[in-house]
Amino acid sequence: MKGKLAIVGVGEVPTGWYPERGDWEMINTTCMEAIRDAGLDKNDIEGVISVNPMAQPKLQSEIGFGKIPEELGLKGCKDICIVNAGGATTTNCIRMAEHWVNSGIAKTVLINHVTRHSGITLADAINFFATAGIDLQWEYPFGMSYNGVMALQATRYMHDTGTTPEQLASVCVANRKWAMLDPNARFRKPLTIEQVLKSRMVSTPLHAFECNVLSDGAAAMVVTSGELAPQISKTPVYKLGEDVLYLGATATQRKERRMGRGPGAAQKALAQAGLTLEDMDILEIYFAYPHAFLMLLEALGVCKPGEAGRFVMEGHTSPGGKLPCSTIGELSRGHTGSGVSTAYYVECARQLMGKAGARQVPNARYLLTNAAGGSGMNMIWSVWGRDIP
Image 1 (cartoon, rainbow, N blue to C red):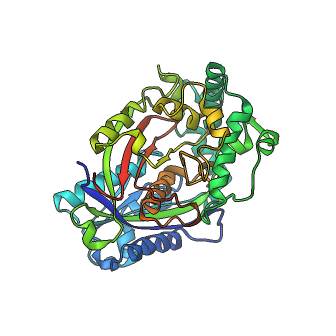
Image 2: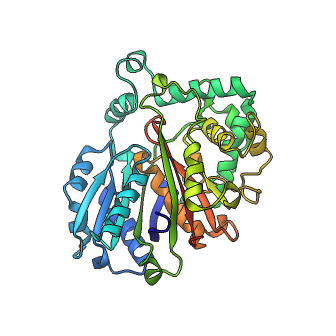
Image 3: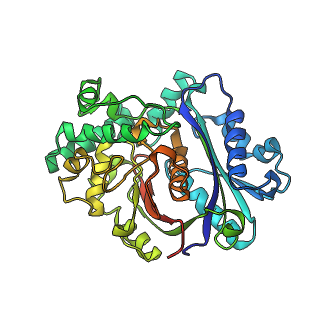
């Protein structure tokens, strides 16, 4: 239901590579920052819902068996839960929290994520990512990987639309322009199309700068009911609409070669909010590879098929452009596993709260964001606003 849930506080540590940092130190830092940002006492938190750190079994067990309230001293906590849906996990954490706050289970809920890839041995990382999201019968025996799956998608997309390597690389450049304004981004040096295309080829047509870089990161947010939110925060951010479409577990088994059906969920989310795409001040498009960003722009109807690459290359999605997109900087942010979308929701809240600093989109009122799990098993779209239309 429109406006039944609101984000009232957020916390985050910069994405990077921190072998010297501890998981629990990062959890404590982000959770307490989110609670303070909401103007609450830690004992006001009545529920904790965590993103499952999939590649860290020891931490997964500790969180899953309820250690966070004990570690943080949350004396008012009534219940905990751990959730897993790949890159769509945070969306499902939010859904669970929405149920809790509107059914009376918990007035305020802390949602958190931490992943520290630097704490995973190389052998364990290879074993995990060799099988996660890959069909073990039809893909794994042939050495398929995420980069390989996405490279096949990119090749098909470029063939169908005439998108050039330069246009694909321009997505990374646009991302970097946002990241240069974000102190929490991992990569902040200026980037050019030429540098992207000269970087190491990983899986044709994807170069190193067009692929994910596994990183350490943590983020948290405090949510509450839409009714209680104005009493807690001067700048609550309301969930206004949401819809989802399941596309299939593994990329090679899907009948749909492209994401053409996915944004149908976006239109339903907008209708639920009583808004249109033209009302959106920002599109916080979640994507892990540049071709997916272009595909989604076209599927949403922002651009005609084959025109998204030129649209991005002309700077329309960059800072100062007519349609700010993915202000989180995505590929320059660093990929923090299943919880990467937590950072997206934190960024959504910051932009609508007016707390995004140098990358703040002026007068941002409404935005559309999405999430997807695995190698694109589903597409979830949600609309957020600083008021309820």
